[in-house]
Length: 330
Image 1: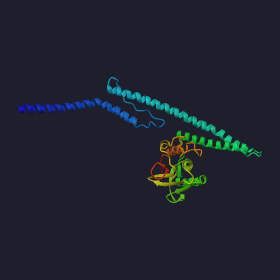
Image 2: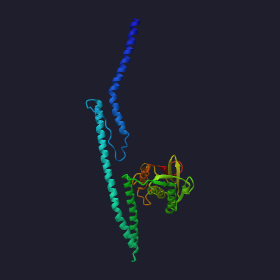
Image 3: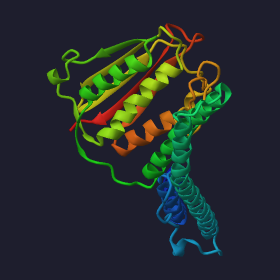
Image 4: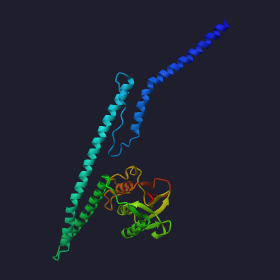
């Protein structure tokens, strides 16, 4: 009886192990198509769907879309969802392309009449005939507004060119020399601010080698926009430092101000077009909300990155904003 019981126990254990192994194999075989479906979904999740034009979104293989099985129903539903997502993204891209083309065309067409308005206003103002004071003030306002609209049109045209992916000039550019020029211009434009410049070899651009490969005019505009932004959105007397340094094969340009800082609600949308701040970051200086958007687009076109750190009166420590632009070194 003991031998009989022992045999029964051994046979039972062997049967349980065999049944478990067979059941595991059968379950894995049945769920193996779901692994392929999950892999297809994983490939879709790695796509950069937020950018403009996209390639064809990968689908679940046809052999896994048989509606007679549960796995096939899941695969078929996933394919239909991906088809809808792809069609929506294509429609959005076409709409954005049309809007960008319209903005570029409209901006281009506005340049000539704006130039004519400025020219005629200046001609009348310089006329030898006596111009009544009220008329002279009106002409000054017309000319100043035409200048402001021309700047807006030029900004829109630049963004349209960058959106279209037009190639920029590629030549060695000394960021140290550009920083010296930018700070010198900032001194003249904002004498009420306290401007500073920090270079590894002093303030002489010949002492350092901080070259990048890119378009000099565009990079000048990056520095000019950052300094103009710091000047516009900080009170007179604020300290603004421009620092240029070599860091891990990249050239880093920092514009740090000791102003009131950027409100937390504005920081996520800081580089969006026409984004303007609250009372701490207003458009008192005639801001169009395109300055940082242009900076972001130019830096991205040069293969660089831009980051912003800011602290307001509600944050611990001193207030201020630091914008850091990192560009690959030549």
